[in-house]
Image 1 (cartoon, helix red, strand yellow):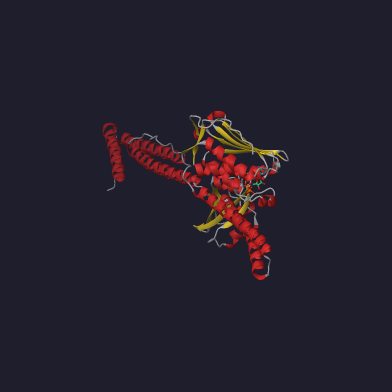
Image 2 (cartoon, rainbow, N blue to C red):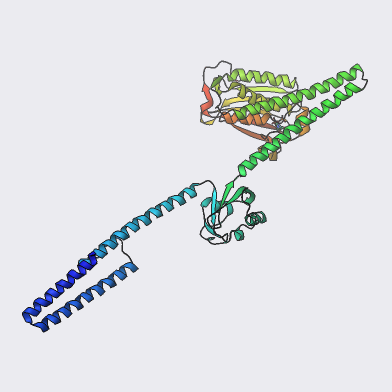
Length: 445
Ligand code: ADP
C-alpha cells in the first residue's frame, strides 16, 4: 500500500476512533455529530492547504518552506526540495549562458546570430562596432534593413557561404574593410562572423605599391642601359662617342646598384627583430668622418661647418647610425645649391638626451611634403633627386634606424631658405665620458 493511502487511512481510523469514543461516552448521536465535525474540519484543512499550494505555485518563494501537519507538511517539504534542485539547475544554466556570452564578447570577431527570417537575435559589441548597429535597439530587425549594401544582401540571399565577403564599411573615423562570412546552423539560422581586415588590406596595398615602385625605379635605368647597349652594338661609333655612352651606362648601372643596396639595407632593418646593439659610438670621430664625407661630396662647392660638444657619445649599432647620419649629410649637400652652407651639430638635449642636427641653407621643403618624406620612394622633385644620385630610400632608412634606437626625427624647413633635420636621442642612448676630441671642432670646406 502506498504511503499516502496508509496515512489517509490512519487519519480516517483516528477520526472514527474519536467519534466512537465520544459515541460511547455521550451517546450515538454525539458520536455521529463528532464524526461529521471531524470530517468537515479535515475538508477545511485540505482546502486551506490546497489554496496555499496554489498560491505558492503561482508565486514561488525560494528558501521558504511552509509548515503544516502530516501529509501537507511532507508535500511542502518535497516540493521545496524539488524547487531547490530546479533553482540550482537554472542558476547553473544561467551562469553557463553568461560565461558563453562573455566568451563571445571577448572574441576579436563580430558575431551576429540571425533567426530563420534573417532577423537579429543577438550580436556582440564588436559586431555593433563593425556594422554600426545596436544590440538592444536593433533586436528582431531584419539585418538587410540595417546593412543595405547590395553585395551583402545578395551574399545572404545567394546562400553560398563557403567564401567570405569583403565589405567596405564606414567606421567611426575611417573606412573599414571587413571580411564577413555566414555560417548556417540549427533550423535555418545563421551566424554572421565579421573580421576587421583593414590593416591587412592596407599592408597588402603597401606591398603592391612597393613592388610597383621598385619595378618602376629599376625600369628607367634599365631601359636607358639596354638602349645604349643596342646603339653601341649596332652602330659604327667613334671612340669618343663610345666613351661617352659607356659613361652614361656606368651611371645608370651605379644608380641601379644604389637602389638595390638601399633596398637590401631597408630589408635588413625591417627584418631585424632584435633591438639595436649597445656599441659605444665615438661621436667625435663620427662627426669628423661626416665632415670629411660632406666635403668630399661637395667638392668645395659649399661651406661645411661643425659644432660638436665633446664627451658625449652614443650607445647603439654603429653601422646603422652612421648610415642614418650620412644620409642626412648627403641630402643636405645634394639639395643645397653651390655656395650654400651645411652645418653639422651634436649637443646635449633636454632630459639627458642628445641631438644630432644637419642644417642647410638649401632649397627647403614645402610644408605639405614634410610628413611624407620618410615614405619609401617619396621625392619632392624626382628629376633633381635622380640627378644627384638619390634613390628615394634614404629617409626611409633613417626612420627605421631611429625607430630601432628609440630616437625621433624632426624636420623643420622653409622653402628657398633651407632645412634642419634633427635626430633626438633619449637619455638611455647617451653615454657621457672623457673628452677625446676638442669640442666645437670647426671646419670650412
Ligand atoms: P633621395 O634619395 O631622393 O634624396 P630621401 O629619402 O633621402 O631620398 O629624401 C626624400 C626626399 O626628401 C628627397 O627626394 C628630397 O626631395 C627631400 N629632401 C631630403 N632632404 C632634403 C634637404 N636637406 N633639403 C631639401 N629637400 C630634401
